[in-house]
Image 1: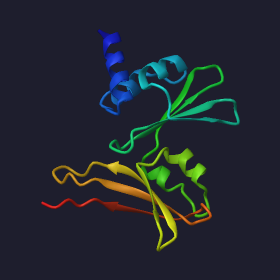
Image 2: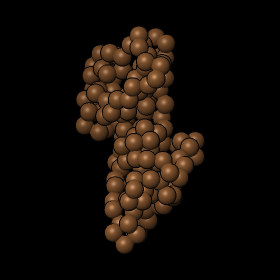
Image 3: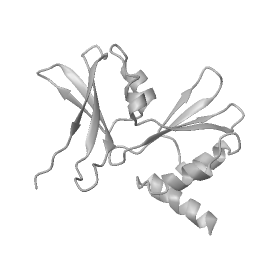
Image 4: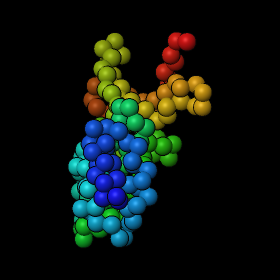
Length: 164
């Protein structure tokens, strides 16, 4: 039965349904679980980054409909080191003016969307970080704005208000 749940979670994750992430994160153990177990549960990563210590960080973004992005670090020994959900206030606070798009992608994962505003001559990336509060169902987004040189010029947030 456990194998079926793992298979079902992997299938749902591959098509963008993340209800099983909670189970996957709880069952994987840093220092014990292997890279193969991570791939079995989460599927192939959306992006891989090589770290200076020989480890690799895998990105599993649940954007645009989800509100999470898991950065999972695998040691050079192919053992899970850490699972971090990076769409949060602590990561938002690490963004500084002058950073480039690769640095932002490394922090927050793939954005839910990217749009160029011709009049302002800036590109804005956004990440959904909340489905809304109890009863209001109005999603919230965090944004990062880049100038034409590809450097961060600011951040922001907004709520998508839906007509009632």
